[in-house]
Image 1 (cartoon, rainbow, N blue to C red):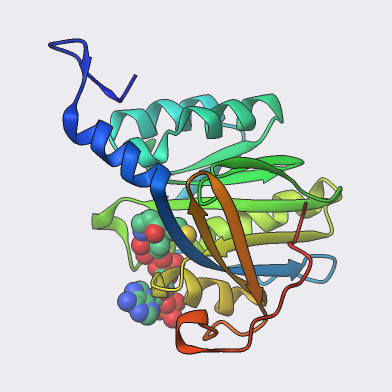
Image 2 (image 1 turned 180 degrees about the horizontal axis):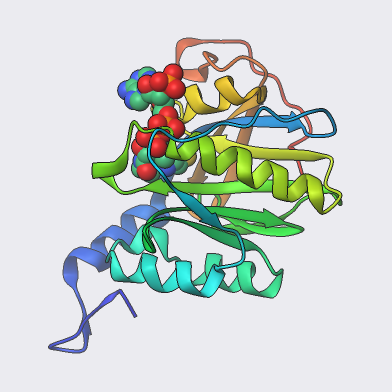
Amino acid sequence: MADFNEESNKPSPVKVMGRILNFIFTTNSAIWFEKDITKEVVDYQAKIPVEVDITSTNKTIEWLRSLNQSWMVNPREIAAALDNNHCWASVHINGKIIGCIKIGFRNVYIGDYNKVIEFPERMGFIYEIYVLPEQRGNGVAKYLTTQAIKFLKSKGYTKVGNHVPPWNKASIRICEKIGFKQVCYIRYFRIFGVSIRIVSKNKRFSILKGGKIQREEIPYE
Ligand SMILES: CC(C)(COP(=O)(O)OP(=O)(O)OC[C@H]1O[C@@H](n2cnc3c(N)ncnc32)[C@H](O)[C@@H]1OP(=O)(O)O)[C@@H](O)C(=O)NCCC(=O)NCCS
C-alpha cells in the first residue's frame, strides 16, 4: 500500500528504485541485550506525571498510525504482534498519549532481518520504545522499560531482551542504566536476497577493519 502513489495508482519510481537497491544490498547492525528479571527490578519514575496503560495495543497502533511514520507501523510487525497477543503499551499525560513501548513474546517480527523470529518460552522482548520529541529527556523511556519488565515478571517471564543500533546512544544508556547486559553484536547483510549474519561478543568488532570473526549460534532461532 505505501509503495504506490495514490494519485496515479502506479508505483513511485523512487520507491521502486529503493526496493531494487534494497534487494541488491542492505546492511545493518545492532547490539543485543538481555536482562534476568527474576531478581528485584529497580522502579524508575519519570520527571513528569505519566501513567502507563499496558493493555492498550489497538489504541497504541491507532496513535502510531496518526503520527504518519511508516517505520513504526510495519504491517508484518503488527500482524505478528496481534497473532501473538503482544502488548503495545502506551504512556499518557492527562489522558493524552506521549509515547509507547512494544512488548513481545514468542514470535516477534524483527525489522532488521525482515522476518519473524521465535524467542524462547518465558523470554519477553522489547522491540520499540518511542517518546514524542518534546517529551524526551524526562525519564519516560526508563519508566516505560521498568513498567514493561514488571509486567513481564508478573506474567512469569524470567528474562527480557532487546536490540539497539550502535548509533542510538540514548537507548544504549537506558539499557545500561536498567541493568541489561550485552549478549552480542550482530552485523547483518542481505545480498541479492541471501542473508548473512556475523555475530561477535565485542560491539567494536568490524570485519572491514580486519577484526576477529566469530561464527556463533545466532540467538533465538
Ligand atoms: C530513545 C528514546 C525512546 C528515549 O526516550 P526518553 O524518554 O528521552 O529517555 P529517558 O529520558 O528515559 O533516558 C534517556 C537517557 O539517554 C541519555 N541520552 C540522551 N541522548 C543521548 C546521547 N546522544 N548520548 C548519550 N546519552 C544520551 C539521557 O541523558 C538519559 O540518560 P540519563 O538517565 O543518564 O540522564 C527517544 O529518544 C525516542 O523516542 N527516540 C526515537 C525512537 C527510538 O530511537 N527508539 C529506540 C529504538 S531502539
